[in-house]
Amino acid sequence: MFHRLIILLFFSSFLILPAFADAPRNEELNHYLSELGAKAKKEDPSFKGFDPSRGKEVYFKEHLHSQENEKRSCVTCHTKDPSLPSKHASTGKRIKPLSPIVNRERFTDSKKIEKWFKRNCHWTHERPCTTLEKGDFIEYIFSL
Amino acid sequence: MRKFILIALVSVFFASTSLLADSDDSKPGKKKVAIKPVTDKIYLEECGSCHFAYHAELMPESSWKALIEGLKTHFGEDASMEPAPLKQVTEYLLSNAADYSQNSKARAMFKSAKGQVFARISEVPFFLKEHHEIGPDVIARPKIKTWANCEACHPTAANGVYGERYIVIPK
Image (cartoon, rainbow over all chains, first blue to last red; front, side, top):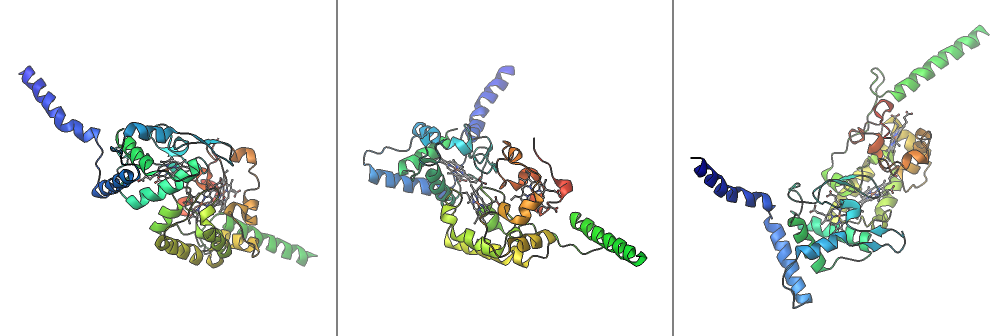
């Protein structure tokens, strides 16, 4: 009896685990990512797909700002752990976690994603983020 | 002489009641107009994600106009937006500016600006007067950081409530 219970639990965990491991991606995000992928392939024919470990580097990469003389990265406003709430570096305003596992509103609206990539890459790195950086970044956030 | 004292007393009485009424918006009797909480979803989203969504009532129309024109270089940020939300945000700010408010603090903000254009609410003379007791050392506290962080000290600000008794200054 006890064994059967263990076996049952063992198999049922397969049903539950995937639900925890992966945040859902809506159709809009899938469409946005496939467009990014097509663009990345065009820019570099050897492109094989977006990579969460490169995305992690995007998240932590520091840039010394030319005018403010301070080191900036995505961490400056989103903290080291994207599943935690954070504070805007210059205004102190609370920012909800970036991770879609804890914040289901994240990465559901491609216009919003583009708007913030434009602003935040400029603020952090003084340049737009590349297609590859955007896709990798999203894969990193979804891998957490 | 008696008459003079009487007039003085009466005027002191009236001056003090109006002062009291001013510092306590919930006092019954005299009609008080509160600062309207922001309900415009587009404004809350577009102008409330980097900082508190400021009440249009707290700055004159001419200052909001200048701010909107400069959104591309907004305090070191690119706050520019798509034409549709921009139109909505502009409409909210201009039609609810201090110029048209009946709230006493908003009126005072408007009057003190004397037609001058300001980049910040926190630079308008009446704002400076209301906050003159707070020094830069207080603003520099990690939980405050900047005057722009109204909600740090006015936790009820989103409801348009800035009154003294609701203020908590973080340590």
